[in-house]
Image (cartoon, rainbow, N blue to C red):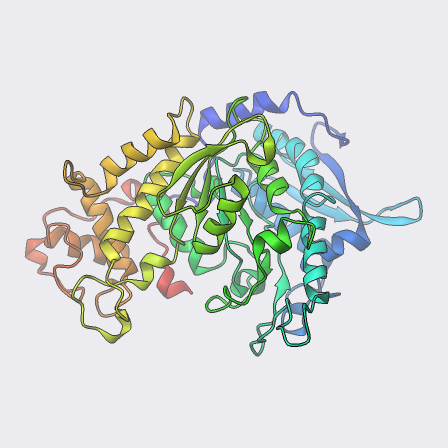
Length: 463
């Protein structure tokens, strides 16, 4: 079985090692450790989830600031391919203020290279231009009341035991990321689970990336949320503050564009082009349109833009929210749970095109954004001139049988979905259940080492 935290490809690791030689960081280093300061404890404590300020419903999950920072930093390291490091957080005094000091003790060359990158980028992510700007925006929203008759900006319709809370994208790759995902907001399970990826949305997207060929989906999970607020997982999007108004303008603070710039330009990015950005869902697409100066951005639109006026071009693709497909059923399925949504097959193909595009655009010698989209559509999408290969059809069918909103039509495991699709000629909608004749299974379930990364995560049953 493949580890969830596989080492990055050798070429990527080498590029980061070479890039790291040009990094200048205010870090005290020894052959075995790298230390750096995040800033004053009083400020850092407001940027990490902490019992000192979190609502009572969540405070018990974060009783110790040092342990919290250590945990999120270890998560980042693992997602950057480093699993051999020890992290220690201390609070030394400097000029009368307690500071937050991070010490990373890796045992590998890659670990030391990544830790040196952290010495630069970790404090940057928490500085006044980035995380502190998000905090300023949240503080402004909490204080805002546009008129006595208007709803408050902050949590206008509270849900019992699910109050809103600032939650920044912590514990994600900071050194070896290969793309940036522009999403909407983190659902509350990500906060209570003490892991930004601990939610159905990211579980499912990791499955898609793995099924589309990524050996390390975490390398594609550097995230910027258009609204860095932990909120209920459904129904909150219409209540949350407008992203561009509150998180990318002086009304709140300018947070989104600088953070997208920072995460899309690690040392291994091209000198002419940043890492690719995928824009997921309607609110992020509307916000992205404002950021790039377009009237609208629709699903499967692609382009390049000098993000924030920087010299390098940022290639991007817009697509559905990662959850959209899982709210769909097969065409003609009469189940009440389908609620009139029957675009399972078409939306599944769109997801795979986006996943393919990210991998194509993050590889050396990437084509233009449009050419990459066309190639990925040829691989994964039905058209008048081409059809996916038999292997691609089987992959799409397996994922569709795991995603189906009709629980009766949903298969319970990768193995069950594979056998169903093999017995039904890769037709995910052959029946409105998950039954199959074992004598009709034409291809055996692949051996463990031949299965896609993340095959074992049955996200519907996990969350």
